[in-house]
Image (cartoon, rainbow, N blue to C red):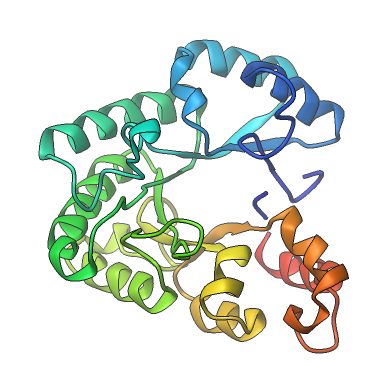
Length: 255
């Protein structure tokens, strides 16, 4: 869930799983959402015009989707850090088409598996390529650190690594595509996932304040798991707050 039931978007990879993919759009609208994000590869099993038509019919906006990430069932978790150039270019071409048809303003480029030392040069080259291609149409490219517990071996697994990556890639981009709030559209930004941050680093408020500017996109990922955590693991919540209170306060600023 990124930061309407207003201000929020329904993540169709996590919500309404009891029904087929396109039917989840109806469920999202019935639940009061006006926007969705799509982090499931099921998206690419449907033609972009078919998905666009379904979104329009329900009055929904797709605000984010994951780029094709390779063969998920075979263990691939993204193509940017280690796949062949041909595979990444194919993923990028598909992304350009879907982003245009769905009128989606941002995409998540998954890094994939691989050690930081051996894959970082390839990763940054591919990110720069994606930003240059998608940025011409005003689409932002997001990167998201994912904790090693949930995805062992994932290339991007800390906020400092993400921030360093954005700085390094942005230095090679024209000013209008450099990460930062001053860039109106396009560029490389951070997808700040509350769940992953809590596992990787803890101290949510401090880390969001530290990494929220200038790189964070207008997209925070919140998980129902975190709401449950506030009931059973209160020591993980920001000091003096439940997660519900923290979410209301922080999404007011970033949504």
